[in-house]
Image (spheres, rainbow, N blue to C red):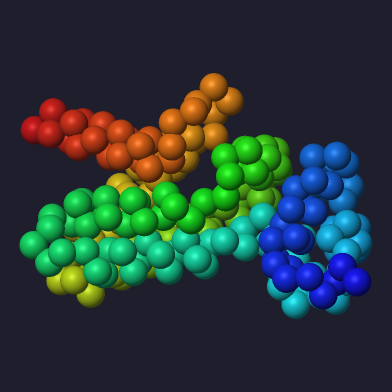
Length: 188
């Protein structure tokens, strides 16, 4: 029977994106998502708190990977280079580009989902700033560097999911960080 297959969270996320694409976010219910995944509604709620959360389920992993890479970066590195290590680490945890495009299409079409996205990015920034502080980076440098890292992430990610883009996320994050460094060096 389908419900005993592994990767329950993945199956639910895939089913949700399929249904959001076919029927729209507002018209899709949790029961329909669970049914499409071959699971029960109860199983859905064991993995996700609500219908919105299925679109943000990877946020915890992203936060952990980013903060761990910042914490484990070589000690003499400048704060922005430490954040670069975090950006490199998170580039490998993203789903396939087409799936990310589908997700962003849904999120970008609904104000409450955009709000949730901003909350998740703020939590990511907080985690990175805390990891920087733990490395001895004082405030406001830790907070500013973390926010700059999130800005680089947002710009690189938006470029990565653009329809005509074919370069890898890691390359686009690196390019965006290089552009940020050029802007800040040129403003002195």
